[in-house]
Amino acid sequence: MDIVTVAYILGGLTLGSALMVILSTHPVRSVLYLIVTFFMISANYILLNAQFVAIVNIIVYAGAIMVLFLFVLMMLNLSKETEPKSSIFMKLAAAIAGGGLLTVFISAIKKASLIDPSTVVNADQGLVKNLGKVLFTDYVLPFEISSVLFIAAMVGAVLLAKRDKQIID
Amino acid sequence: MDGGLLIEKLILVVALFSITLLIAMYSTYLERKVAAWFQDRIGPDRAGKWGILQPLADGTKMFFKEDFIPLNSDKWLFILGPGIAMFTALMTGSVITWGPNFEAFGRTIVLQVADVNVGILFIMGFVSIGVYGIMIGGWASNNKYSLFGAIRASSQMISYELAMGVSVITIVMMSGSLSLRDIVDAQHGMGWFVFKQPVAFLIFFVCALAECNRAPFDLAECESELIGGYHTEYGSMKLGFFLFAEYINMFISSAVIASLFFGGYNFPGMDAFSGNTLAIIGTLAFFAKIFFFIFVFMWIRWTLPRFRYDQLMHLGWKKMIPIALVNLLITAVVIAAYNGWFNK
Image 1 (tube, each protein chain N blue to C red):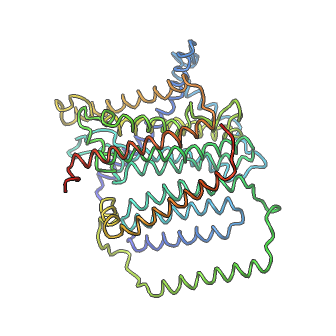
Image 2: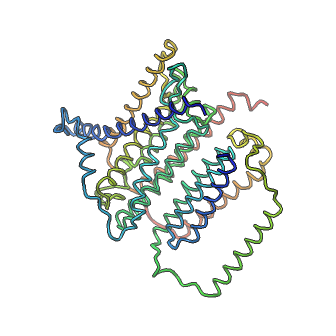
Image 3: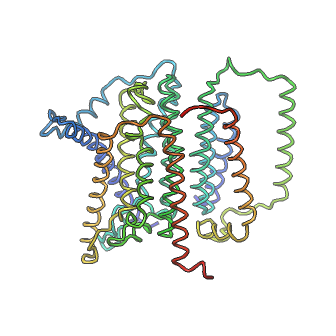
């Protein structure tokens, strides 16, 4: 089995699990399929020899963010009876928004050229050392700006939590 | 692929799997013996001489109990929970370096299943996945105590992972590599990182206790308030998997602590040996360190009382993370000054 076949099988599995996220009716099952999707994306990264990105994707997305998603869903105790009924207007708005996003994606992908997945440009490209160098030389401004964004989000969250004075000590 | 390598790795995987299970099995026995010793009792002594067959008796009992699934539970997720816990616990052992290279049958055998160049992150990743076993199992049980246990476990894991990650970064900066083999090799002889990074070691150790859900951080299965926490509804071998995963995690944590901070298979005066003698003594030294840490884990469990939940969060977010970050900053500045990067 050559690497192109592996890439196509992985791609199919990724899309399949991503589809299951939106097709499964139970929110907790959806989140679990999303976790599987993240694993599949990591497998794709490994195929591109980007091991660091792959493992960080697992630690950050599957290991931390999805735990928080699951956390909230478990607290909500969603079931068929408590699910809010969405009106026809809401459904229409969702369809238009989703269709708009799909158009943007298609127009972006149409321009991109398909690369043969078996041609490795630089075998060590995804390793920590090279990634760090690129991140702190060529992309230092976007990198720093995104970290400022994170700080802003954290300060905002702390501010929201501190709004009502709680006296617990 | 060369056939010899395949056979070699296969033997290594099977050996690692059986050794892990054996150590986990006898950890349960050791735990009871240590507890008995600390409480001035005799402990298990009925099955075999000194109760040495006790783990077998326990295992048999677990297997032959009725496998019960509660009516209102989510059946598949209920089965999946312990499976994930066990799987992730067993996977982490694959990147640990168990000893120096071994020479046999005209080939060099590396005592490591896979030298992944992001080794330590691989372990962190699987530890963070391990919480799903507890969360899914606890939620699928459809029991309020299980849900409480699951939620406690997950928030505790996320909180302590941060401080753990930061203390690992200091070690990575010292060794300049994420591969566990390179980290161990950087501590040749007596140059263990615990002497250079005592603060990072303390933080890592406390976080390891929390990540393993061991006392004093075993809030997830706190029996005085939550019955059994996330495994309240479990019985038979599914419960066995949860308990077993905890002991495997303890074993792997001890191995990681030993390799990150206590030099792995390095020991003082190792330059006097070479070849297979070095490999055997090095592996034995590594296992001696692991067993010492397993004992420390038990020692702490039977000495310290359990934390209160808010104390746990307070310790994690307001003490561990700031200390770890300051330690990281100091280490970075010292490394930069040592290498003369400020004078450029």
